[in-house]
Image (cartoon, rainbow, N blue to C red):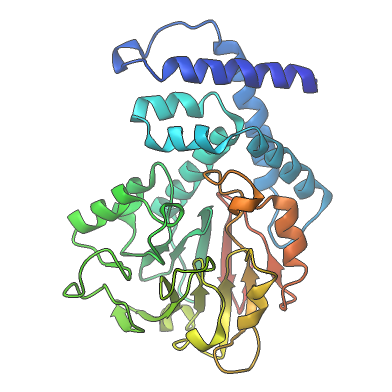
Length: 351
């Protein structure tokens, strides 16, 4: 069976490359590979549904099995292939999505999140959080919806359904140009430290406080985890308002986790969203009771399976590495949500 899957993967990749040169006029062309593509899609969808039938909060055998399969899909997708997918014409990218297992999952996760955001009705006192891709999260309350670090090929489709967008820094795996432009076109706030000059009220290179609807946003400016990128990352600490019971979260982007730079956070937070740090478990530097530290109820470790990165030396962290790292974070309730998964904050805990 493994050899058959390898052959299917090889054939479907060849099909994707061939289709890259096709125009929209060739949408209905018969290739002879349709059956293989159908089988591939069915196989991946079974895996994805297995994953989504589990919870990020419980690492059981069913979840581990699904994650292992997804890791295998990701391992067969090279970074340059994924970059071609991101930059291709819409029809090209849609064809590639049919021919690569991890891209099938990538697209189905987006469609699931988008559909949920469009149709969910959030009860007062609760918060819904979706993990989209890499460090991208969408958060919806009874009074509004916002997103942080959305990097996805189809991200612009989110613009009508979110009230504001936060971008931690100017690296392509943390933003999507088309989504940003769509937000600007709709007159919706985009918070960053670089997108516009500082005459724009939502651009700031210094710690700043904002109020948008019921949301209170507080920013800190920190170094990136790569040397030489000083004051490059905006950390967002957000109080989601009284209608959520003042649910709070911190999203660190690719911060270097230097407590002295976390100047605009609270000593306690409900959910902390850090990246997998490449520099020796420095995530724990900001967890505690000291200056520039916070005590989280939950940690959602992110920046996993970033497909545009080539390997672990380029910060392409595997699921196995993420789960191992999560076990070392100084918060008992540390988890690794995957693309398309939703968590609900209710009665003081994540469900």
